[in-house]
Amino acid sequence: MPIETWFPLAIYYEDLPDAPTHQHSLLEAVLQLEGETVEPHNYPEMAWTGDIHGVNQIHIHPAFQWIVGQVEQHVAAYLQNIGVDLSKVDLYIQRAWPIVSRTEQEVGAHCHNTAHISAVYYIQVPTEEMYDPGSLLFFNDARVNEVCPGLGSENTDIVDADNNLNQLYAAYPPVEGRLLIFPAKQRHAVTMNETEELRVSLSFDIVLTATEKAAGAYEFLTPPPNQWKKFTR
Image 1 (cartoon, rainbow, N blue to C red):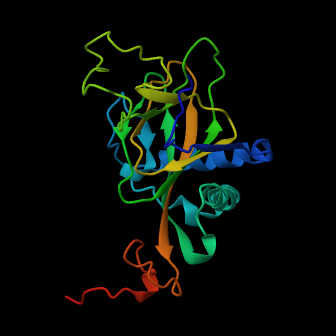
Image 2: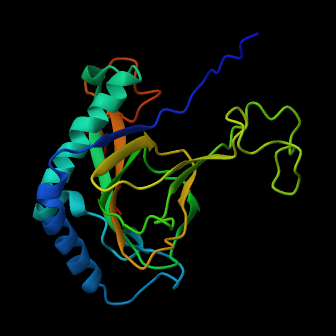
């Protein structure tokens, strides 16, 4: 008897063919931005993330124009593949920032509550094959197949955590030159960089709004920003 799987999480990825051409300039730009940070706001075991260091607008920085164009192109493809009519929505990069992970640094579990789509691009990935360079984990918070609440807890050994119908998470090892796109609401984390090399990546948050002509959509999508009025106070 078959077991069918419904309601899948859609993770999009593409290995960008021009990545090697742009790697050096992107890496140089990220490390320069990190070096300009006046005061660190991360603990030693945390990767350096630009969003908590005031570096969260790289999408308007000239050095990142190529990857911004790639993000726009592939986010559009991702949305079309999941059935979104692009003629009825406008897309905005809300914020974008670099991440630098050194030895034994990680990124804790979180989700991007202010965005709709998130993207990650890997500029440089450690080459030490015996160690984890820091994998992207997507957590199965919905647990639709957990027939008894808590049965899959890490405190028990009742459910096989490797069973693909009851996995606690899905892991994506980083690949140099790869762009990943996923729903921003999906809780995720990055495992510890076990190597002696840098892992350098970029993160993007994308927001969908209704177009000005998308009648009836405003109840479900934010109206376009040019229709907003800021309070005067």
